Amino acid sequence: MRITIAILLTFLLILVDSTPLLAKAKTSKITISGAGLKRPIEISDPKILTVFSVWTGPGTSGADRQGLIIDWSQGPIRETPNTLHKYQVSFYAGDSGHERIVYVVYYVLNSDAGSDYVYLPGQSDEWYGVNVHSIFRGDEGKWFPAWNAWERVARPLIEKAERTDSDQSR
Image (cartoon, rainbow, N blue to C red; front, side, top):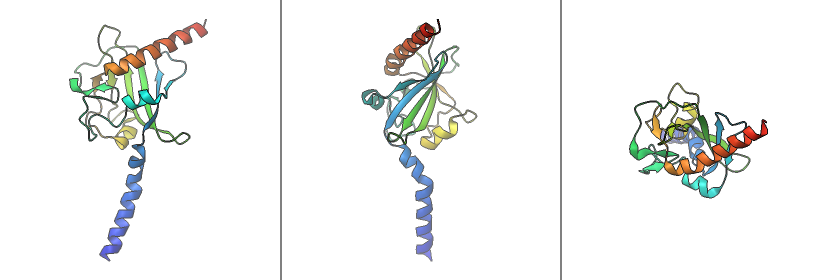
């Protein structure tokens, strides 16, 4: 009887826990959408995707000072940034044709000189469930300084896309 229960529990744990294990596949794509963008920006360069892995930072086995697109070393910021340029950054994982969103954050360009910011959706936010299903970081619902490596990638892409969208609407 004990063996049957043990086998049944093991089988149930495999079924329940299989999605998070599959979710830890390599990041296959990052998209940036929102604010003034007419269509999402897609980042699929493997060199860039390796740098901005979902599976880094708090809630993972690593003690990364920078990871995802956040500079974790500075900790959360106290004041919510005021900005009109808010973007949704979605991280996808899986093989081509079977990719799915595994993590979503919000990125804001700081209109003043200084750091951009990243928001980890909190419990009342749309993407919270998806995020904590992949990784529970313990910092959900907080703003953080963006990692400067991310700023160097994202800002030019966003500025170029907004210029292109602006030129096409004339």
